[in-house]
Length: 426
Ligand SMILES: *[C@@H]1O[C@H](CO)[C@@H](O)[C@H](O)[C@H]1NC(C)=O
Ligand SMILES: *[C@@H]1O[C@H](CO)[C@@H](O)[C@H](O)[C@H]1NC(C)=O
Ligand SMILES: *[C@@H]1O[C@H](CO)[C@@H](O)[C@H](O)[C@H]1NC(C)=O
Image (cartoon, rainbow, N blue to C red):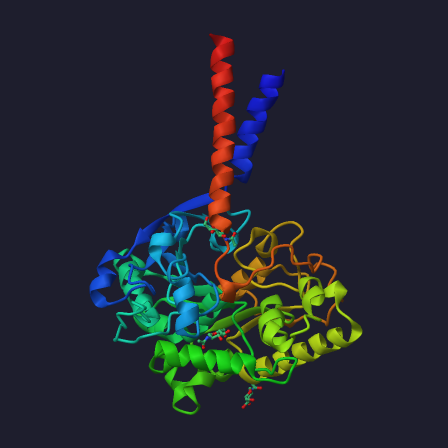
C-alpha cells in the first residue's frame, strides 16, 4: 500500500512539477568577433526548437539582471552568471512565455523559443574595443546581440514567418532598444513585433530629490560606450544618457511594441524611487517589502510615482500599433513566471490575462491598451508581498541552481523507490 502510494507520488512529482529544462548553447565563434561576456568568455543562449505549426516562428527573449555602472560594480559581477558564461547553469527552466505546453502558453508554446543569457551588464548595448589588462573587463553587449542573432539566423530564423523579441527587466529594456535592429535583420515578409516586460524604467527623481537613476544610467552608457548603439532617432536629438530611458525612444520605434509593466514596478520603487542612498534611515524598508506596510505619506509618494510613470508612457506609447498592459500589482517581470503569465488565478486587467492580451495583440486579433485603476483596486493581483526580494543591481540570485538541486532530490527519491520495488519483487 505504502509502496504503491510512493510510486504514485513519484510519478506525479516528475510529471507535474518537472518543468521543461533546456540546455545551454555557447556561441564559440563569437569570441573571434570580440563578442564576449564581461570576463571574455563566449556568450550563450538556450533554444527549445519549435514544432508543428510553430516551426517557423521565433520568440527571442533577453534575460534580465540589472546593470553595472562602474569598474567596481562590473568587477563584482564579472565572475558571476551575469558576467561570465563559465558561471551559468547549463540547464534553464522554461516557463510562462517560454513554456512548451499549450495550456500554459497558448500562442507561443510551439514556437522556437530562445532565452539569451545576459552577461554584459548594459542591456546588450556596450561596445568598447579597448580592454584594460588590469581588470580584463570587456564591454561588448551590442556585439553579443549581433553574434547571437547571426547564430540564430543560421539555425533557421532567417526563414521566420513570425518573430517576437521580448525580455524582462534589463532584458525588457534591451527588447526596446534593439527592437528596430531586430526587424532589420529579418526578411521583409516576416511578421515582427517586440514585447518589453518590466523594461519601462522612468526618469524620475528619488525620494530625496536627487536624479539617482539618471546619474546611474549616464554612468552605464559612458562606461560601456553604449551611445553609438542606442536608437539613432534619439541620440540625434538628445543627450545619449537619456536615450537609455524608454520614454525618449519608444515614440520613434517603427516596429510594433507591447509595453507590459506594473505601474508600481517593485524594482523601480526599490531602486529608482526609494534607493537606500536616498533613504539613509531606512524608513522605506518595510514599505518596499510589502505595500500594505506603507505609511499614508509613502502611499501618496507611490501614487505620484504611478502618475509620473503614466505621463511618461502617454507621451511615447500612443500610436495604434502599440500594446499596453499596465496593471496595478506590486511586481516586476510577469512573462517568465507561470503564475503571472497564464494560470487559472493569474492577475487580470479588464478580465484579460497577460498571455491572452499579448497573443491577441501579436496576431492582430484584438488590440490591447489598458491601464489599471490605482492600487489597491485590482483584486486579482497576488497579495502584493514580495516573498523573494530581488536586487539585480546587487548581483545574481541562485534560483536556477536551487531548482536543479530540487530536481536531483526528486530523482533520488524516485530511484530509492525503484530500488525498494526491486527488493520486494526479488
Ligand atoms: C560604483 O557604483 C556604485 C553603485 O552606484 C556606487 O555605490 C559606488 O560608490 C561606485 N564606485 C565608484 C568607485 O565610483
Ligand atoms: C502622441 O503623442 C505625441 C507626443 O506627445 C503627440 O505629438 C501625438 O500627436 C500623439 N498622437 C496621438 C494619436 O495622440
Ligand atoms: C550563491 O551561491 C554562491 C556559491 O554557491 C554563494 O557563495 C552565494 O552566497 C549564493 N548567493 C545567494 C544570493 O544565495
